[in-house]
Length: 217
Image (cartoon, rainbow, N blue to C red; front, top):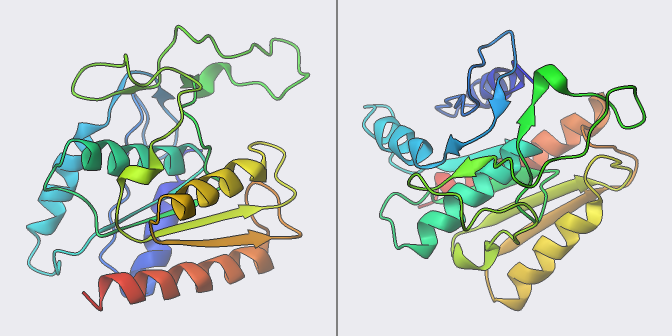
């Protein structure tokens, strides 16, 4: 959803955070959404390194994403943790995250389910790369959320019809079973993207989480 990451960054900046809207999609811009196909996730690690070099950056970074952006944030953090990368974020926050790797997505051909021209994802079409390879990122592969040892914020609307909120509940359960820190919130009257009141509530919880885990380190 083109432009929403810039909106989120503006909200974060208004709350006092140094925020950078990372455009990870292929071929998109602020007005037109790009595709999520063969996206090299380590570009995000490079962006984090650059962000830490800003004089106004404390060095403490969180990754925040919504929907496919949440999938992106989880994958970057957990894959980097798996290989022992020194470029880990201090915290991760997600709204409406899937618990498995999803297939490639092209906004130009997107249709709502049931619309003429709707097609299921092709599992041969990969969304993500890690150091140039996608073999470990096949669609339906569980995201290794147990690997990241830092604090994790998970949230979902219980009326979400895009990703089942059960995905977030499974992520929470796997984190707790692994003894990893997790803060989970479920919004009873909200869908995939919260409405105005729901979004205000979500942002209050999100900012409280970020203030706790970024400014107290």
